[in-house]
Amino acid sequence: MNMVTTVAVAGASGYAGGELLRLLSNHPEFEVGAVTAHSSAGDKLGRHHPNLIGLAGRTLQPTTPDVLDGHDAVALALPHGASAEIAAAMSENTLVVDCGADHRLTDPDAWKQFYGTEHAGSWPYGLPELVHADGSKQRERLANARRIAVPGCNVTAVTLAMAPGLAAGVIAPTDIVAVLANGPSGAGKSLKTQLLASEILGAASPYAVGGGHRHIPEIEQNLALAAGAPISLSFTPTLVPMSRGILATVTAKLNNGVTSSDARSAWGKAYADEPFVHLLPEGQWPTTAATVGANTAHIQVTVDERAGRLVAVAAIDNLTKGTAGAAVQCMNLALGRPETLGLPTTGVAP
Ligand SMILES: NC(=O)C1=CN([C@@H]2O[C@H](COP(=O)(O)OP(=O)(O)OC[C@H]3O[C@@H](n4cnc5c(N)ncnc54)[C@H](OP(=O)(O)O)[C@@H]3O)[C@@H](O)[C@H]2O)C=CC1
Ligand SMILES: CC(=O)N[C@@H](CCC(=O)OP(=O)(O)O)C(=O)O
Picture (cartoon, rainbow, N blue to C red):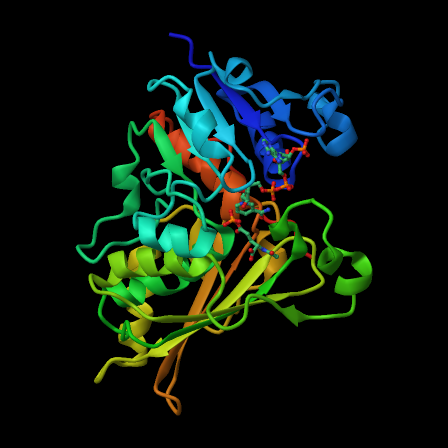
């Protein structure tokens, strides 16, 4: 049996597409097929991703169903709204993994409110480690899937930070506060004034303050699955001068009678067997640098007794566990490969 799986990457000139190609280049059983782009179609890939030496001579093709068809799997790393039409043109047997938001939300009203367009429908959600209220994990819903919606990067960090405490009932679902430090690569490579080096270097600036960020309904959706009840969330991201990385600090009210060791054991149990999500040894706090280039999430929790709150901190690389690594992890699961195949767990720090 031929074990090599061909994977086309759409949006290959972008940051998420580039990270997909870096990971796929090192995957023992996946082979890079067509690489496509939009305004850069016709360019050599090396012009956009000088790190991808082995693929540098490949030519970027236009992102059309014809070019993407005929692969075992297609990874979409396109702007929001661009995936649905392409995906609809792919055979039902082709695995399509979407790094964009188009198919993440189950509630069409929430989609309309935060994205302003018609909802394209929802796909199985690609966060394998998400623990549900009944103790099951999301990975069980991904085996043999042929359409998978990969989470937003902020969403991954906040969900992994909080879900175990909600599923175990050690924290209240009604008062969750998340503040994040985010590297600008999360915003993609298109030109925006607020992303110029002159704006970012030497500054930390909040954005989408006051409940406007489109990741809020996605986090609420995930954490409600963990809690088995609706949750409420205050979410504030901050742009900071590091290229990659997200550090999410998330706090919630401790339920009555919960001790520090009860709290810690909820996270310990949820992640004990997880290959990519690590509860750090007590007293050691996550740092984004330790996750750069790795498909990992580093997590620490403690109890702030004075405030009566649980504090969880999660660090991820937005481009790896936050999107492209998660996409490859989901492809492994859906195609019956070992979940960890080809995925780095060692970060680059410092
Ligand atoms: N960056 C990150 O950390 C994360 C990104 N994501 C998601 O991944 C997707 C890609 O993001 P990212 O790589 O950061 O974005 P980039 O802006 O870096 O790349 C966008 C890619 O899409 C192509 N493109 C642009 N417009 C169109 C269009 N109308 N039709 C088809 N292709 C188009 C671009 O081609 P060209 O350059 O040739 O114009 C480029 O290849 C987005 O949905 C994003 O939200 C998810 C989680 C984290
Ligand atoms: C720094 C920055 O702007 N980051 C982005 C992260 C985007 C992301 O995670 O992905 P999706 O757009 O696919 O949801 C943001 O906060 O909107």
